[in-house]
Image (cartoon, rainbow, N blue to C red; front, side):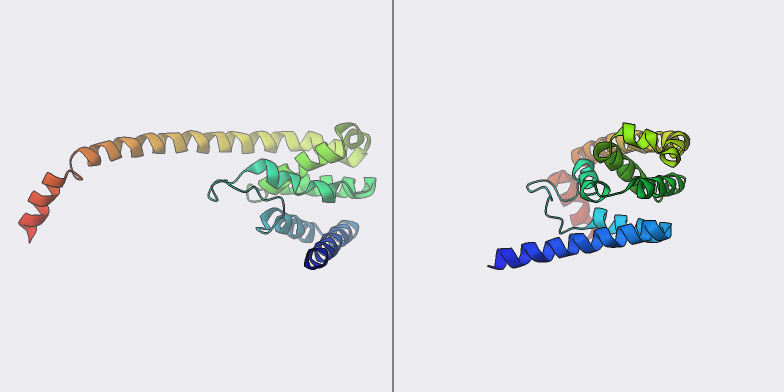
Length: 178
């Protein structure tokens, strides 16, 4: 019985979120739509959360698929509005993850042929290319910098491990300070 109540409650939440998203798109309120999508992506209680993985490692695939059930319900006019929003959000590095996740979900659930048949969506796809390339280059540079930091950290740990953490070294130097 409790499982049925929880399932009904979850269905009501999903329906409410879908209705809120449709209303934001109908009214053309980009910030409200962005907030709704961020809530979907950041929901820690999402039922498809992967079990058994390191909590510090954020996997992108399951996050993007959270949007699929919402993007599958969009009409052509809502898709056109959403694609204009996606293009706008993609110009800001703060919102580019939401933009790219939504674009991926739209391509998966709506299909690229349907997106191309919607004039505003097709125009937005062309405009997304430049900023998307910039975001990917920025992420690539961050990725390379992370490897450099990891390498330097490993070297430092080896040096520290060979000298400072040696028990004899610590006993001589710490004991001498007392």
